[in-house]
Structures are given as C-alpha cells and as structure tokens.
Length: 301
Ligand code: PEP
Ligand code: MN
Image (cartoon, helix red, strand yellow):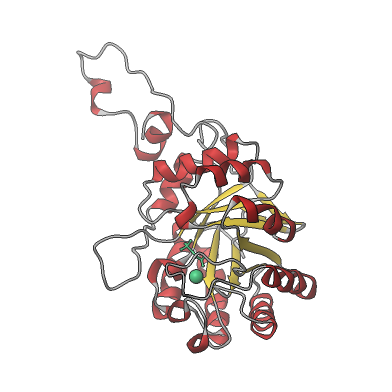
C-alpha cells in the first residue's frame, strides 16, 4: 500500500523522512481513491432500512442460515435472530458451492421466503447475488446484496453492483490482500454506489485445523485505511461451530461494525455449512454476551 492512508495506518512516514540526504518525501496517491480515509474522513454509515444502520456507533448483529432451505427453517432462524436482538437476516437463495453436485439454493423461491421473513419479523435482508443476471432479481428483495468471496474479483459483477441502488456487502476473497479487497470495493464506489461494507471471512493459509484463518488484524487496519464499515463472519472464518462465539467476541473487541453468524434450527441436518452453524440457543447465548464486549470498547448493540 502507498500514500497517506498507509502512513495513518502504520505510523508516521518511513525512515528516510528524517535522513539528512532526503530532500523531499512525496506521497504516492492511494490506489483506492474513493474507499480511502483520505477521501472521506468520516465513517460511512449505511442504512439498510429505516433504523437499521451499519457503521455508526451501534454494533449490527446479523444472523441466518447459510442457505434458505424451507419456510419452517427460515422462519425459525429469523425468529431466533429477532429475539436475540439481531436486526439483519442473512440467508442464501443462490449459493456458490464448491461442487456442482451440492445443494445450490432454492433460487427465486428462496427470495420469496426471505421477503416473507422480512415482513413477519421486521428484519433487514442480506442475500447473495452470484452473477450479473441474478443481481437485479436479488436487489429487488435484498436490503443489502452480498458479493461472495469467490466473486470478489468478478469485475463485471462489481461494476454492475456499482449501478444498483442497494448497499453491497463485499466479502474478502480467499487469498485477497487488503489492497485487492479495497480495490474491489473501489469498483463499486467508482460505479456510483457509495454504500459498500467489507466482510472479513478468513483467508486461506497453511493452517489445516480451521477452514480458513481469521485475519482479525484486517479490522483495525481497514478501518484506518478506509471509511467503509467492516463486518466479521466468524462462521466461514473458522468452519467449526465451537470457534464461532469466541471469534465473534474477538471481532467486536477488534472494532468490527457488524458480526455475521450462520445459524440453523438443526445444524446436523443443514444442507450447507452445518458444521459451522450455531444452534438457535447457542446464538442466543452469543448475542447476550456481545453487548458486554461492545460496551467495553465504547460501542453499544
Ligand atoms: C456464505 O456467506 O454462505 C458464503 C458462501 O461465504 P463466502 O463467500 O465468504 O465463502
Ligand atoms: Mn455458508
């Protein structure tokens, strides 16, 4: 990374700045101009629906199943989210699965169920768009459109997301550097959509004991470099439900603006990501603990 934003994030100028042989130190412009804190000093606050904000003083709790599987499953997860104080229901209607033989989501029927859950529980809806063709359909129902890790560098999708009038949740690519991630956000911003939030969901490393490695240092670093809100997804970051609550708590302590947690009424029967899904009582317990941590770092829920 280059420029003033890096300096702000990583300390004052490089060592050459004080050397007698140095005549002048010039800052190279940051490559992610619109996402940069230099361009916009204040935090961006995204309104998902009236009263549901991401990036202000209040921590936003997002819960929901990896995939919408049935009306009963979704409504149970939505009710548990609302009861726990969550304001956002996240569930996939269109799923980006590693294998073409795995459950791909209910598609349009999933969107219909999400819309119904929103009306019933007053939650904001976040759901993923897999491609340009599906983006408009998803944006019709979603209060915020997710762009998944595998699509973080799908530049035609990012450009299309710049043209919609709905906020975007941009997940970090599996092997993306912070600069690549911020430049992906820049595509959406440059396209005219200023409502972009970044979601840290773990990156692929040599570690085998977890599905991914949660790079929590990206939270304060991105917040120093950029004005965009940051959400942490401890579910994909670990792949294992016993690790989800500790990492969610750590994410709040690190300054995340939101936490996105996969939940399921019966994780053992989930059609996708069951091993990393919290049961509904486990989610309630986590939700009760988060306000304590939020308060300790000057936030509220
Ligand atoms: C998901 O959110 O269910 C998902 C597939 O996430 P990611 O794109 O981070 O892998
Ligand atoms: Mn998932």
